Image (tube, rainbow, N blue to C red; front, side, top):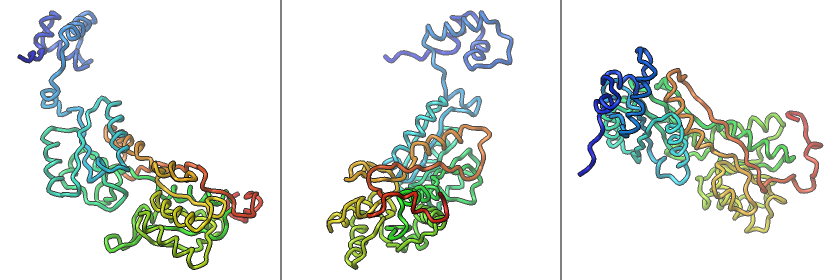
Length: 355
């Protein structure tokens, strides 16, 4: 037979105090005058008996269960964003919280049921996360609960919202090329990718291109061209191949993500162009592909782990501030960027703008 759970009354009896005294000691209450000796006896008795508090019962009394819920569309099962979950779990553990993770695959009925079940378990708050920064509509059930959004653009929710700094990422990518001395023949591949579903383009792509253009303006440089394509290797291979087939040899490519860069690599190398001697390439995401491509790809990281940690840190903070909380993105420099052919001293080529 399973061993019966040790009760608070048994701890009190072992320590020679009342159940009320034992409860105050073990819950950390300091507003009662309990002698140091009595506190010691209660804690020693709890250790001897291996007492574990009934958190469900405590939650019913205090409305605090030390549990949190993370609800996402596809983040938990994505091969790219799993570090969000790891960061959230680590931060919850650091604050002595348990994190329940649920995924909806975009099914709104499932989402409602999942949130209601977490509410039935009296979680103290929610992280509501989506795959990639995009407009979304969190369920109304969350309006009256402590909630932090993660990559969810929802102006009607006056709560903290954790986002990657995609504008800063675009600046990092452009600055890497400017520092190498590139002033002409710079093309963007993928950019913000307009489609029927996203007629204005992918929000992350739009923000990154805004950062790119800010830096280019500071240096008095213009993009030589922009090629729209889906953020997949086959699509970018076709886009870059069409550019090369027209007789143009780009000096540098800014790719929308590492998968786009992979297709660009194949197109360039398939036509005998060397990276970075003939064409420099920068990208975004800093995924495993960036390390495995040859030469290794310079890519701006997506700080998924830090985003997960920040979302939970904000959620457990009673003084959390509403509004956007951006997580910086940094360039991870590798081997895919070099000065343009025939130019070896980038510092000597700077004309206006930043120095």
